Structures are given as structure tokens and as C-alpha cells.
Length: 333
Ligand code: NAD
Ligand code: LMR
Figure 1 (cartoon, helix red, strand yellow):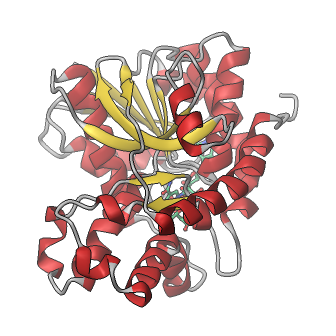
Figure 2: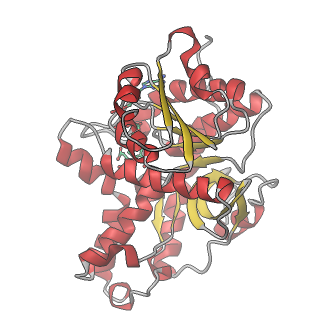
């Protein structure tokens, strides 16, 4: 019996993400919340014969808290997407939406796993954490910034460079750091199976790293004003949510993924701070999922010289984005 909630469920990501979650047979309740059209999307999905019972809620009459009541997992793709010429940082307007949703989660589902998709992830995750801390319900093991789209992009693009586009699923590349341009740090040297030919070819490698770091811009440009990645994000978001659900409620052990998380000492983040040589409050790291969420934070591991340079650039850009989220003051209700 798992209750999942999608906040921002009527949007470009929200609708296909809700569809994919409706197809997960472990989910028995699926509540959809949005400021528009959530009831319609819920009615539509409710005709699919899978176990999840779907309900939709709009904002009047405390709709958010009604949707969230008793949630085990909340996935959040609420907020404005990019248009060409914008950076993710330009989306910091989404901070207010995130603070409001975090407060609703604190009130109605303080023990839920919270998966943040809304951009800029590097700042919105700290906004969630600060709101939850103020409400006295922050659990760093359960707040996960979703950077999984970078991970699926890395597999797809590596396979394509190798001339094996149909075998993308065979390639595992940890992507750490953050979720924006230079903060996205693909660890190509740790690719499994190894890709020595790409590592040895500087031009090929640089182009590949650039494509992974700026994959989001590729979609924004192609959509030409109609938004950013929605379908690939829905797939990445559902896959990631299903990993969390399987580990927390399905008894599946040992799943290692990357997510953008709080590096507090309580959560075991000190070792990562040492590894990256920076006192950052957040970083996307290797984690082992389990019943409590982040069961273990695992080492980033050895970096080659190229990656050491990329790490420096990532750390430099991440610091101010985290600070922006940490110090955000929501407008009074
Ligand atoms: P969209 O505009 O299509 O959908 C956003 C939805 O959020 C809309 O339905 C809107 O009504 C809803 N919304 C707005 N305010 C809300 C509130 N207060 N409460 C609940 N819902 C609210 O946008 P999209 O393309 O689905 O993108 C959503 C967000 O996800 C953007 O910020 C985008 O940048 C981000 N994104 C993140 C990643 C990632 O890798 N983490 C990938 C793609 C997009
Ligand atoms: C992405 O990586 O596709 C998302 O963060 C959306 C964006 O603005 O690029």
C-alpha cells in the first residue's frame, strides 16, 4: 500500500509522470495536485485498470494538503520551465512555489519521501530543506533532488558516441555535482563497461561532457519557446521514484543511484565534503537507497585529471546557488 502524490501534475512533466506512476502496481493511491486541471488529468488516468486509485485536487479549500494527506512519496515537477536564452537560475521564481509546497508537506505528510524536480534544483532543494527545518520535520535522508535525467542522458549519449545507440541501457555512468551546466559532473572515467577509446580522445570526450552538461539546453532550443524536457524527465522521474519506492516499500536492497542531497553530518555528508575539498551543504552523490531513503552515502571515488578540473568548476558555481536557496525568504502568506 503506497500513496504517491504528484504536485504540478497537470504540467508538461506532471501528466506523463503521473501516467508512468499509475502503471506501477505497488502504488495503490495516486493523488494529483496542481493549480489547474488536476481533476481532469485524474479522471483521465483513473480509467486505466491498474491498482492505483487516482484523485485530483486543485488549490482552493486546501487542496494541496488534502492531496498530500498520508503520502508516502511526493514528486514535485511544479513551476515554470525555461525558454531559449534563460538559465536555470532565471527560474528562481519557482522558489516561492517550492516553499509553499514544502509547508503543505510539513503539515500533511511530514514523513514522506520528497523528490524535487522543479528548477533550479541546485537552489530549490535548499528551499525545501529550510522550510522543512523551520517546521521541525526535516529528514535529510528523505529529501532528494532529482538529477536522474543527467544520468539517463549520459547513458544515451555515451552509447551514441560509441556507435551502439541501441545499447544505451548497458552503460552506467555516475553523474555527480548539481543539476545545471558546469555543476553537472559526469564521471566518464567510472563508466561501466569502461570506455577507454573515448577517454583517450580529448575532442570526443570534451564534446560528450558538454552534451551531457547542456542536454537540457539542447531540448529548450529544439522546443523553441514551448518549454523544456518533459517526456524524458517524466521517464527519469518515474524511474527514480520507482527505485525509491522499491527500496523503501518493496524490500529491494542495494540500489545505488545519484541524487542531489543535503550533506549534513547527521546524514554522513562530511566524508563527501572532504572528498570534494569544499564545504558545500548540497551535492549530487552516490547513494544506496533503503527503507529510510538515503541508507548510505557512498564515496565519489577516484577522479582523473579532467574530472578534477570539472569538479573545481562545479563547486565554484554550486556555492552561490545553494546560498540563494538557503537564504530565500518566502513572502508572508
Ligand atoms: P509546465 O509549465 O508544463 O508545468 C508546470 C506545472 O506546475 C503546471 O501545470 C502549473 O500549473 C503547475 N504549478 C504552478 N504553480 C503551482 C503550484 N503552486 N502548485 C502546484 N502546481 C503548480 O512545466 P514543466 O515542463 O512540467 O516543468 C516543470 C518544472 O520542472 C520546471 O521548473 C522545469 O525547469 C523543471 N524541470 C526539471 C528537470 C530536472 O532534471 N530536474 C527536468 C525538466 C524540467
Ligand atoms: C533539463 O535538464 O532538461 C531540465 O533541467 C530543464 C532545463 O531547463 O533544461
